Length: 305
Picture 1: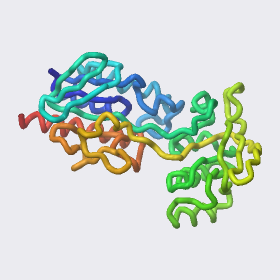
Picture 2: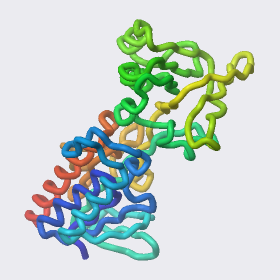
Picture 3: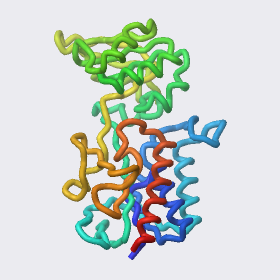
Picture 4: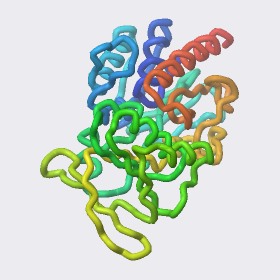
């Protein structure tokens, strides 16, 4: 039996493992089959403190993992298939193996919703992005598009307009779903242009290894047009990776794990950190900070047993 099992990896899970390992708590990290989280899709990370020249997302995750391993954390690259939080010790199953722990930290993250186009994943981090805060500086004086119509999409467009020469917001309706203050901000920005009643049907050009443009379909007329651009930013929402915990933990209407305080879930002894409980910030540094807090809270909890 482990004192702590961490489900998930990325900056939140690995940071939690650094702290639990350093606290001399026996720690198992069940990383998931896509270890490292969303940062594995990011080529260059320029806004993580301590790296003034930037660092590749994969390298940052590798360093965090090595640091946790140095403090004694163990790792398995498997997906958890089931959990039982009804009694302690808690039971988790993966790959035909059952493990038990006195405390669990959930760091399963969230997945950006994609359009489902063939070139989307091929060109991810090669012109296709799901995070303007992360990648906008790479598109200085470039032409970019944002796909979406909610607050998140308009916020992405505002960030991009600080760097790009022109931003088009592609929206399938004839008005934004975003708040009035965001709509007003967009409509008064000379760099930003809405493209109404349109959907992206194709992203070019995977054969060149970079984005050169998109094909747009007018949903009213069916007319297909080409729109040259250097970058495509997807802002159609995120899905928290919380399906595993339905019926075990309290989730909100969008599937995010509900926190009773900063890291405590609805089950005593089960803690949460990172994007699976954070629909607002979704940054590597906030996820890492939450991982630290979850580990400290788990340590305090274990002292009471």
